[in-house]
Length: 339
Image 1 (tube, one colour):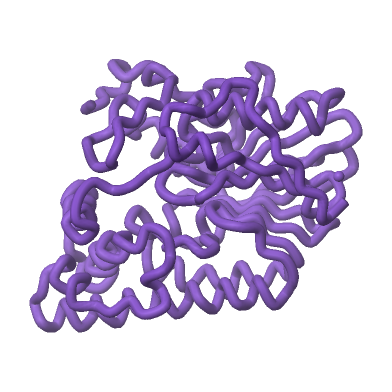
Image 2 (cartoon, rainbow, N blue to C red; image 1 turned 60 degrees about the vertical axis):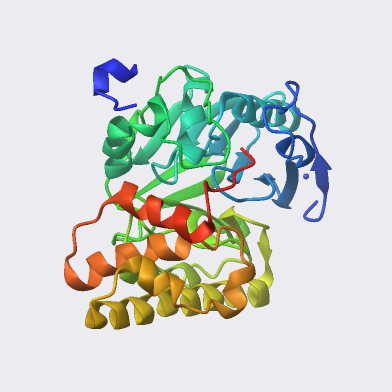
């Protein structure tokens, strides 16, 4: 689907393999030094980790069966997605890419959908499908970041072939894969996690950030908080987050979820104080000491999250571009990206 049609406004558990893409990612000179890695985190389950996990630089995953494979998410740009698909061909040379799953609508997880094989069945939540259909950023991004962003897809988008309402289950050979919605608005209103119960592995999309500031501006702060116990309830031994390093073991997972809870509670506490004081979200952010969270990547997202908290608390209309304008002010200029 082109822009004019939508009215756009502008294999062991500790093995790690560095995979150089067949088309070097040299659009951004810093990005060229940040090589994606592939980690087999459970038998036949691979995490594709893209450093440094900041704006527009996401993680993906692959589940490999005897004859078929499933990929979780694509990337923001065509060249990053080609590198991802090259990796899939390396680890699963004899399997067909039967399924692809989008964990949510955001472009760093979906814009590369157009490069998937035509016969791959693409799956997403029904609200994720609607959101991607209406996404204007795929046709041209406002000048919010410190370098021009070219997705390399000419404004084309590929929407899911199968839309999930709540939960679904697919099989990659004998491996059961659960697709589960948190039954609440959280990171977005159309999130899915991908659970491989046989291997106690959870591919969480952007419901989990590790060492990167969470982003809930297009979802709900209270919903994201409410999703944390739900995520813990899977009893996963491995979580592949949407951004940041893989989480292994109960201790790492518990720490990450606890840190996320503390951060989101800080957002809510400061937003509540701001609403009562009739302060703007930017004023709240400028007056907040982030403490240990200041070292997380993309800390300017705090003001974006406060904007969303104002909506959660007081029904204030949410203006995404105004929120991003405040994020640039808080950061001191356009936002950094290595995409």
